[in-house]
Structure formats: structure tokens, C-alpha cells
Length: 342
Ligand code: BGC
Image: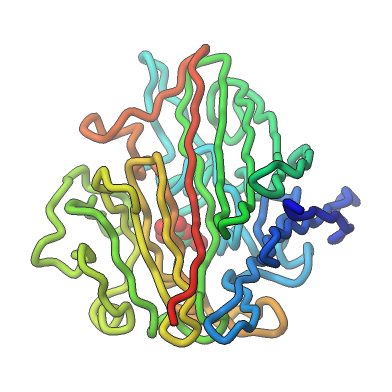
């Protein structure tokens, strides 16, 4: 037995398009649920140290709420075409200036108001020897939200029998463009309350500081002697007394990018990725919103670990290149592995 996948109607969009929820279950009983709307991960059920199942991600109960409110939170969504901010929503490729839709003051955030978090993906499913797999496809047309090129996007969720959620991102274009895809799940490994009892380690010697609008200044600076030094595991609650986190870390070339764990449940999450950066966002803008099962999400109710290229790279020559050309294949892989510490 390699696990199973079931599909059910989750709701209908405002224009009556049916949206389905896929339930992937591995042979250990771990469950990941995801929608064909925005590729949204709605639930991740993991066993804690007492053998009790805990849902470790934030989200809403209904499609209506995702449609109405998720442009503020991006709960569980696939983010594209460009994760995080592009300054003034502008960039240049080969002497052509492209202007994106602005949805964050003067800047473009997470692909724009009609980013991938709002799109209906074509789906197919498969039970592989590793575990169940959900394949999501979307063709983003030339000019969508201002981005050049027809971009064919494929996001694959595989839930392995080692309790890993593997996310693969594949994209191809017919014209030079910029691409930076990520996943915007908010984790709370205690399943409720705030993330203050969480311990976090980030294998990054450097980070990219931001300006007052949360756009990178272009500097790449050492984390040493700053509150961004998570090279050794630290209690997040203590650190959050000083600052809120919403910043990109430059990952060291180590096997594991980030490790987070909850004292209460013992659930531990290890993140590894082929991407050069990770955004630690500690849910600073969660504003007492009512989420799943009536849970109220407030500041610090969850944290995002968005593996990515650095924000605003199209305008920063010293950041890794994010231009995808015709004939190139954008391929990235991020693994979220869940284990339990007693
Ligand atoms: C960004 C935050 C933003 C949030 C939206 C995060 O990825 O870094 O600045 O407010 O997404 O939910």
C-alpha cells in the first residue's frame, strides 16, 4: 500500500466554477489536502508526540473566504509569477520596461492581485511507489498581471511515505521573463495559539535587509550579531519580543535549510530546497481573522517559510539571476519533512 488520494467538491467560485479538494494520504496516515484553486494547501495532518493528529497549517473553511480574503494572507497558496515584492512593479529585460499590476502600495507583491493564488489549475493524480502525488498545471498568458511571455507552470505535490511533502516547480516560457515560484503555507506546529514555543534554526550566514516598504535594499549582510542569526536553534518567542520577521535569508549550501519544532507537540519540520533563499514571515499582519474551525488568527499565529529567489531580484544585479528564457526549464524542489521529537 503506497497511500491514497480522494477528491471532493470544495465549493464553487463566484462565477460558478467548481473547485475540488484533493486528499493525499500516505501509508502512515499523514494527510495533505489541497485545492485546484490557487494550489492552496488547506490542511496538513501530522501525528504529535502523544499520537494525536494535529493540523499544522492555517487556512479557511470555505472557498468563499479564500476568494474574498486570501489576497491579504495568501494562506497555503502557490505564489507566482514572482514571490514577494518587485519595487514599483517594474523591471527591464533587454531594454524593454515591463510594468506590473501594483497591489502593495507602490510595489507588486506575490504576482499581483490576480496572481497564481487565484487561478484554477488543471489537475491529475497518481499513486507512485513513493506516495500519492497531485499534479497542478496552469498556463499564464503573455501579459498576465504585466509579466511577459506565455508561461506554462507545473507544480507537483508528493506526499512520501517518509512524511515528506515534496513540492516541485517546473516552468517554461516562449519569451524572456522573470519567475520566482513559492508556497505560502503558514505553519503552526502546535496546531493552535501562537508560535512562541517554537524553536527555529536557519542555515544562513547572510540575509538581505529591507527598506521601509519591505523591499530589499540590495545589501547582503552577515547575520552575526543581529537578531537574524539563527545558525544555532533559538526560541522564537524570545526573538519575537524584539522584532517581527519578514525577511529573506541567503541559504548556505547545506542539506537542510531550516528546522522548526514545537515544544508542545514535539512536531519538527525540516525544510530543504534547491532555491537560494528563504523568507521567514512570522504572520505579522494577521489581524484577528477567523480561520478554520473558528480559530482566531492573530499576529504570530503562524509562520511562513517561503523558499525563493530573493525579492526584487529583477532590479538587483548582485542577486541571483531570475530571468527565464525560451528553451530553459525552471525547475525547483522544496521538501517539508515532518518528524516527532519526544
Ligand atoms: C510577505 C509579507 C506579506 C505576506 C502576505 C509574505 O510573504 O513577506 O510582507 O505581508 O506575505 O501575507
